[in-house]
Length: 399
Image (cartoon, rainbow, N blue to C red; front, side, top):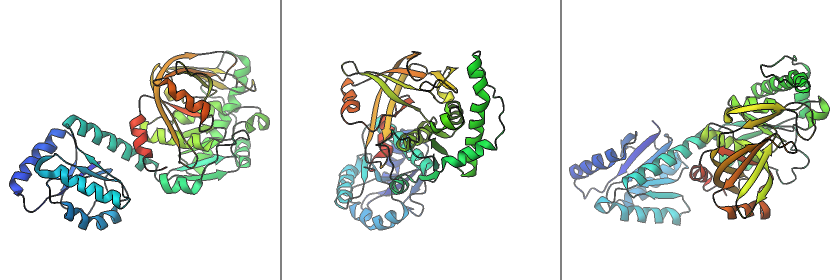
């Protein structure tokens, strides 16, 4: 079960009366949980551990428990309280004690609806963090030469997120490509130039899939522009397909973008659309994002075209359903992040831009200033739906 509820109770209170309040309060939350009572022996083994402070006079009990709890979990301490029997006052004293010792914690208190929403959000974020731990992500080739601000701190990423970054030489991909048969994919095009490029694009897809299996990767970022000169083709189709198959597949060797996509996948089940702004209207909050690939499981339909800058290979023009979206990016050392919500209002297909083009209007137009004054690189991740609160929860305490 994802949620465990533990209790601390003062011996001065009548257990029968407190037990009745407990049943009524926890029952009102309408959540599934494993009730552990005062047995803390498996504390920290669930996705989310809640300490239900049932009464006042429990501050000393918690202080005695704290060393044992710290050994079992490094997660924040979530203090659940109904507000009955001075439990809120005790929770405030406990939280103050935690803060004095530079430990993270939160009191979960309020209406039944608020408490349930908060627990649901914390469980969602904690589940995503659990999925991130142990992930292996490849950096195939170095970051593209123009990504001069997109380095990553490998040790910090592993320490804070549990993600291992693995460098894989571009030479190894090219050697794998050389031994991979060129076969025709199921995708097709009426344009002869694209139809001729499809077997080579499929060969790149198959070779990348071999690398993910060889290194046991959950994802990678690819120095994809090297393929233009090496094999006269692009990785756009391969990345679109691999992202839709459950991997994270990023462009241009952009490690911070890949990390952002991995967090997105852990939270939402989709990698997100890696794109860069092509136009910004600071007054309206409207922005145009574009790139030549997008996960196929994020779009209602797609068309094949050439890669924009080179005019060769196979690019993807995807059409995502209009609606709410979240723009997201973390820095390579996880010290900064950008998270804003908005609306995808339209998809377009202008010939002078990367093939997938989305017009997004930020809820808060003033947030466009971030892109013009203090951006985290150029690529950002577009995720269907509103996920700001959950993403903030995942990243809390990392900076």
